Amino acid sequence: MGCLGAGCLAALAVLCGALGDAPSRGIKCGGVLSASSGNFSSPNFPGPYPYETECTWLIVVAEGSSVLLSLSHFELEDTPGHSWPSAFRPDRHVAKRGFAADYRKGACGGQLTGLSGEITSPRYPESYPNDAECRWSIGGAGGGSPLTLVFADFQVEGGQGCGFDYVALFDGPTTAAPRLGRYCGSTHPPRTVSSPRECQEVFTAIKGNFSSPQYPNFYPNNLKCQWSIQLPPGYRVKVFFLDMELEGRSSLTGGCDYDHLAAFDGGTESGSLLGRWCGQESPTPVTSRCNQVLLVLHTDRNTAKRGSVAYVGVVPMNVSCTRTDFHIQIPVPSLAQLERNRIYLGTPSCAAQVVGGNFKIHTRFDTCGTKSQKRNNTSVIVSTLYIDFSAGDREDIHQYEVQCEPKRKEASVTLIAGPNTSRLSQAENLVDAQQREGGAMDAREIKSQDTSDIVFISICILAGLLMVIAVVGLMLL
Image (cartoon, rainbow, N blue to C red; front, side):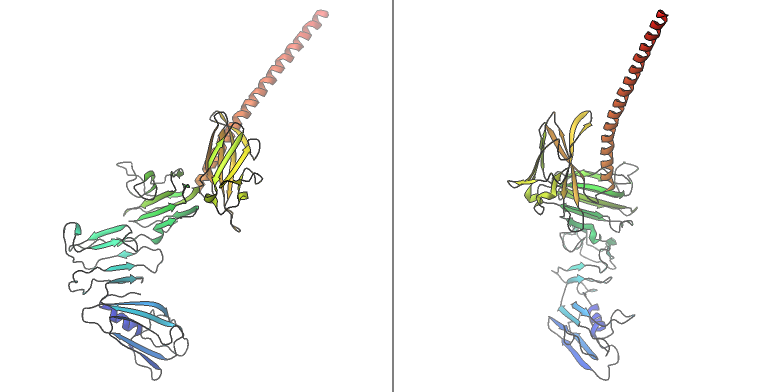
């Protein structure tokens, strides 16, 4: 709990003051606190306080000065219908641990955690002092819900660029957070809404997912959400878009000028733009070129929709091939927590070996579940590399398609899917499967056509033979 300004003494009286008739018996405690700072607590704290106790503390400050009161512990008997007892006056029924409080005179700023409240500059409504720097950190008790700040009165020294006295608002607990505004003069700053806490996150796990605030319901307006994915060196990041429903494109420019989601290669918005989306588009997955990706959601004051995203870290690996063999190599530090049998090609019997600090798989094309396919009129050898991150009862197996074109000795690897990635990854797999099946279908059609031709030719030959026999028979007769 935090308190600043003239309301502090009232808050203290509500918490601990004797506002009603004193009981006829019981323990008395409390006192007058005149030091510049100090602390006080309920009797016997942290043990249970005695029954039938009444305590009153009075903090004395000069007129116009302020007091910052903070409660580090608070545990009293719950009274139905009352948020705070009118005085610290336990009855004879239930005894709890009580409370512990700290106070500081002449305070400027503080940590505010209530669902609502009011803050003022020092000495308000009189002029604030010179050379003051006050910082209030407002963290609502509503978890990740946005906070709304409304200025009821505002008169601060003006100046171009607010280079003298000013009030700055930041969308987070420190000045390193995105700045929401900087104001001075006598014009009231606009009503400001913070971003929800889940709107500013950093992910370091190999896979994960996140969504717009309040998903699957619509997100709030006036947001700037940032999700930073930071994986170990060597990794890349593949981002899947599970559900995308944002405000549509501008009818004037055709661009994503309103609500939009952007992805940047690296940890900042100055990195290369991987994509910018809006509307009800179904973006294909994007893959970073480094081990960090920043996704930023901007929303304006109008239409609100929703969105959900998943990502999977692409394991660093070197894949090569000859005309007869696959060679796969993965640095052990990249998968340091895994045993070699958790990395296999095609089947668990084709597990990796540990050689010189690397997981290695060296296998011929006719083993380990490899298959010959035709893609884009080119013969390729394809298999699936499995990396098993499963733990306990949670299955977590990532799949990579390994491909080789033997004639050119060119190999490639593509992340097919991690568990719970997205419908889009499934759609990608379906397209690949259809392409593969399409190639097989072409082969079956060719084979069927070849068979039909053979049958037709055989029938023609047989008919010719029968005709010859018939002619010979007639001549003999």
